[in-house]
Amino acid sequence: MFLDALDCVIMPIPAFTSEGLLPEGVHDCSLAELQERFGHFQRNDVRPRLFERLSRFIQHAVATGLVTSIIVDGSFVTSKDEPNDIDLILVLRAGHDFAADLRPFEYNVMSRQRVSRLFGFDMLLAEEGRPELAEHIAFFAQMRKRDDVRKGMLRIRP
Image (tube, rainbow, N blue to C red; front, side):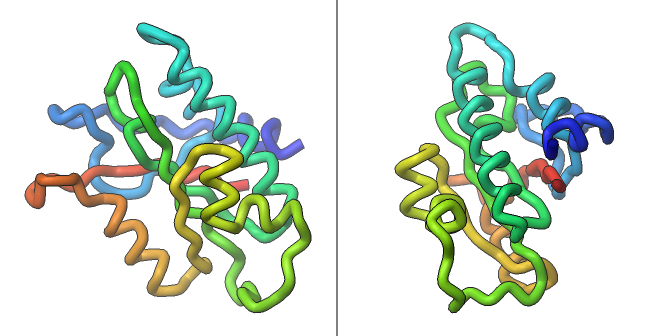
């Protein structure tokens, strides 16, 4: 199973900056490490509920066979006690045919509208090795109303 394979490769998630953010860049981690660091009860059950939805999304995304990695961002990967969102970049295999018909289970993880409705996440799509991926990462690294601060995000690879 995919989740078991991810649990075998543990890489430390960096400490937060003084702003309560991950240091700038994309940091690899396992799903187990993501859960340990961000998916547990703090003041309420917001984090475990967000993690459960993320875990389900990852299972569905991996089942498509089209995904090389999932980049996780949003207040979920900050020091906030009560995060309100998870933002994702779904990275597809190089050479993905965006014009091809999708099966329903593929559509459910590749359509921004379906992902928002089914899982409650904002998501961008990018093909591995294409300029759009770097553009999406740069977009997510920005902080609202803080041009001087760049934040990091986490990458899970199936």
